[in-house]
Length: 190
Image 1: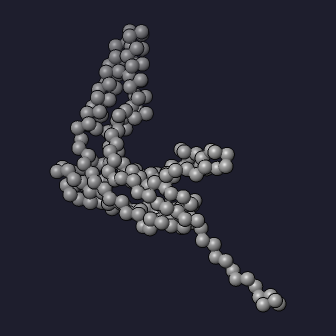
Image 2 (image 1 turned 135 degrees about the vertical axis):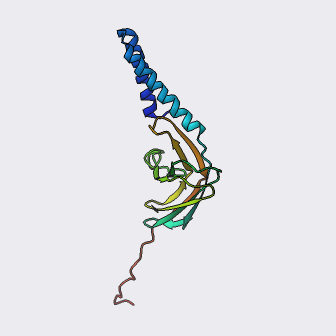
Image 3 (image 1 turned 90 degrees about the horizontal axis):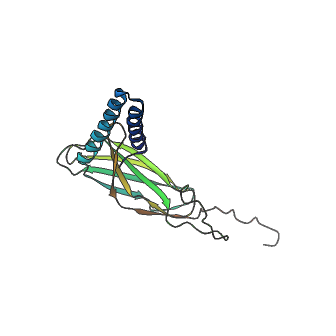
């Protein structure tokens, strides 16, 4: 699919063609044709390039207390017979179901609760694996969805991208924080 930059370039090409028509300047038509050629070449490069990645995600531990953190370990493997292209791997964290306040609204906005970890995966030989890990801080209690893990392939100019899901969603449970309590002081009435 076209990225935001790709849409901007496509609109720019049509503006150039329209300006060339209105002003009668041949060079603007040439620029418009060249821009559309770059768009077409980028689209073909993304569509024809194989991206056959498989990934596993291990979440340790899957249950933590608020204020602690969990570690996510990713393993990405190339299943294709050819070397893989450079890809961006994204893993997201979002609340599974936002808690409701007494007013009936969600405890946090839907969009602001999502965070992402991004990695660039270098070209992998057939059957080769690459490993990455990151820390996942647990600030609030609740159930959180980690994933899905997505691999994104784009063209050289960033005009086209193709996103593939390579690992499913796993859940992280965050329990309330444990507060150490001091013993009661000794009083005269013991």
